[in-house]
Image (spheres, rainbow over the protein chains, first blue to last red):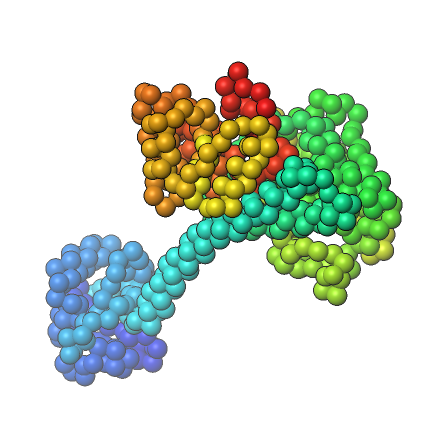
Length: 368
Length: 121
């Protein structure tokens, strides 16, 4: 029949059956895909192309289709297989269309060999599993290393501590000064190890969020108090600005996360500022009908160059590699802040003008 | 008593506690410490968690099971810091948890929380 001439040219394998499931036409692609010459297939039942164990089910499917023939893909959720002349099987995708002719209703099935696609899907699944496994191993490794690294630090921080407390006896000024440097380096090392552990915890989904009511004024005050001497040593002013009525302002969130983010931001501000001030502010605003709290840290420091802005929150990025001697730190700070902020449902943003200073802000929703 | 398989950790705690005026004895492992508890009275045990013979949790469980030794105050001193570690310690019978690395100036204050009232440093 004339309709069949078009199907001959189709890139898909086409098999046409009549109302009884008898094959009336196959195109050249179908010959190739199934490994038959068309004379062998015409007038045969379609089930010949179906693996034996599925034939019974296929007959039932056909009857179902005949009752309501429509254009549709065949059993999208079924795993379908075709059977070649040599008995081998391959996965297929099939779509069906009814053709109404004076001789009756015929069903045109377009059959696609999806072996290649299935192989790619399976490989992807295997790779994902391997990746999950590797990530789990990485996190366990980080946790174990963190513990291993902290143990010798116990002796370093502990004994420099006892020496500085002068428990074994008095110290000369030089001894005291040198021990102080050892102690502060050890504490720095400890905070790096803790940061690494925190990042590993967050990324492995093991960091728990503990929500409680915190006083905004107290939180900001604590952070300023903790870093005041660091600022004064550099000749910088560390100021706190709270809105009117801030005394009673409370927020429900994970206090440790907020504390860690603020400490990080203020530390950075002090680090990258040579003269002037670092100001910590708390502001509330209503955006889109929701109350939000913005905790911001503004400095009058060196600012952030435009070409670095995109990389700012990535791990282990330093503002300027040539500055590494001046600015210590492995650069996990902002990355960790970002992760912590995500964890508590907040967002971290910044504005900066090279040479004039920067403002980093943590915005958090204030639930009713 | 101080129970820790690591010599420098033991050394540190023994030194600090003696400097604060306490009488202390150090043990390399949980089993040796349990033995000592049979013979002597101790008011407080500072116990590391990761040890080769029995771990800190097992030590605490055994102590708490023994009616004669139950009154001793148990404090875990450990570098473990994964979520759930503190809860595990309390569940095993520890009265408290001090994180390593310890902070020597603050240590005396932290310790005072766990000592029976008639003690003073």
